[in-house]
Amino acid sequence: MLCGRLSSKLVAIYGISEETVMQQRGPDSSPTTMVPNLLRTEDTSANVERLRFIEHKGKRILLADLSSCSHQQLIDCIKAVPQYVTRQPENSVLLLADFTGTSFDKVTIEQLKIAAVFDRPHIVKSAWVLSDNLHQVLLDAIRRFSAREIAVFATREQALDYLAG
Image 1 (cartoon, rainbow, N blue to C red):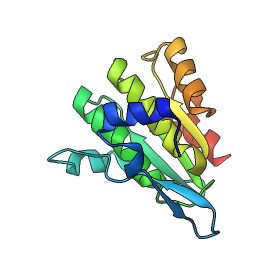
Image 2: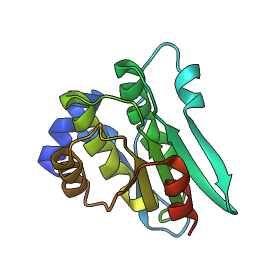
Image 3: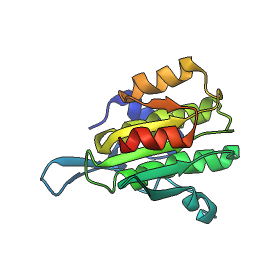
C-alpha cells in the first residue's frame, strides 16, 4: 500500500487512513489508487468552477484555476484535484494549475505535495503558472516528494502551449 510517511500525512491533512485508500483494478487490469471524497466543504459550487476540463489546440486539459484564491478556497481545490484526476485513465491527464496571485503556507504546501503523489500515475504532463509567489526551494520540495516533473510558466497561455505541444 502506501508508505508510512504518506499514510500519516493523509491522516493528518485529509482525515483519512491508509485503509480508506482503495486499490481497484483499472480497465487494463492494472491496480489504480482511488482516493475517496477528499473535498470536505459545505459549499463546493464555487470551488468546482475552478476545476474544469478545457480544450486548447485540440488537447483536453484539466484547468485548476487557483488564481487569487483565498486560503480556504486553495485548500478545498487542492483536495479536490485528485478526485478529478484519478477518475481518468492512467497516463492520460494534462494538468494546468494557475496559482497567479495566490499565497502559500505550510498547510497548503503539504497538501500540494500529497495531492501531487495521488495524481502522478494519471498525469502525462503538468504545468503550473506562478507569479514569484512560491519560493524555488518549496517548489523543489513538492517535485521531490511527488517524484513529478512540474513545468513552471509566467503565463497561462505559455503553460497551455507547453501542455498542448
